[in-house]
Image 1 (cartoon, rainbow, N blue to C red):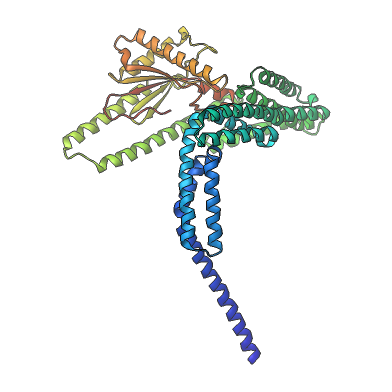
Image 2 (spheres, rainbow, N blue to C red):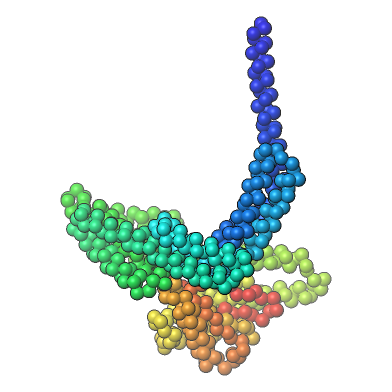
Length: 485
């Protein structure tokens, strides 16, 4: 009886110890949250600003103080001492954030080069070159924190050169070397017997990528894209060989292969609530799927705009004028704008232009307008489309018109910026020459270069969409929003 009581007492004691430990742990967590709350907010802001890279001196000091506060808390040191460390850490983090703003202005080119090298995964594929660049950039950032702008700029230029070298090495290692290995592997597997054209395309793209990298090492967008395509085609050839080998060996029929190739299209169509009838080939179902996707994309864009409008309306409701007559006039004006938008939308076929809203602004994207490569010449075949643009502008008299020029990412940044500006100016000149009712002060050309893509620059189709002109109409309502694309 005594033994049983002792065992129960022991279990009870153990239970109480666990509970007490949990209570202490919870109390410690609560205390930590209370003490570190403001510093954690500052730390989050510093991390979002990439202060560890752009302001390493201040960030390192903040990290040292933060760790010291954590250590003191774990050892039960005085709260005042912990608060003092955290206060200094918060101050250093705020200083670091301020320093990042200056770094983004002073070391712009080096930062862009670092981003490009990082995107090429240089840390993995060109570790030595990446480390040298990182050390030089850190030195530049620390000089800038110390107030020596000239030395920072000099080291920033050195870092930019090193990052470009690392990026180039990474691209070659990640794409070119891997593609060479894949092509060699494909040849050993006699892939050319089953997919000779695809394998040949991989080899051709590899040569083009190497040439592009050699000729212009500072514009890696095109060679990187070529290298990726080469790698893809090499893997594609190996896949095709795997699929075609059973047919060639007689283990499967051509009909089996054709039916298998149709299955994904049928599945995609089904997910869009379409029926893929393939009795006349792929063209019909493919066009229907594309049309459905484009409609969904437009609906998604419009939904986003409607959400913005709802937010704006909710804010407006909170500050309604007492004069109901003024409010009534405003609602009538908004309905007039919506009617005009629908009118403009009906002017264009789907292959000619996309008509979108941006707050109270109207964006006309004439996708049917195509410039020759590297040229700003407007061909006569596009005059009919531009006449529709004229009519759309006339639907909103006295509006401010912004002609935005955009390019894809191929080519140098400065070249693309100039080309986009020249094309925007060409459209402005055309519109002024054909619209006597349009004041030159009401139409402004702006070139954005490659800075505002609307599609993936890694695909031919995406780059075509990015090479565009956007015509933004800002109706003179007194409350219209600024353009953002």
